[in-house]
Image (tube, rainbow, N blue to C red; front, side):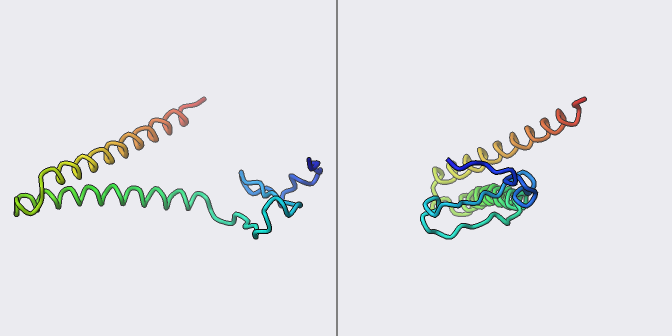
Length: 114
């Protein structure tokens, strides 16, 4: 076991809620280069959120496009395919609505704390 020194929690090692850990034994990382986390985690979270919303939008557009194609050319696409795509789009939209409602409710509860 390595002892924790007094300067371990020095300000250089702590950035917000991230603590930079330094390995002193080469067995800890099997000789691979150690990457320090320099990314902005909030930016990464927002990118993931935007991509997820874009995917939900794509599913909605695909379901609508399949519906138009079914009306224009009934033999070109099966109703089964349309129903599956429409249900995927509906479920993903419902999930996004529930997450948004939960986020708003949580924000309201946190803002009302006294």
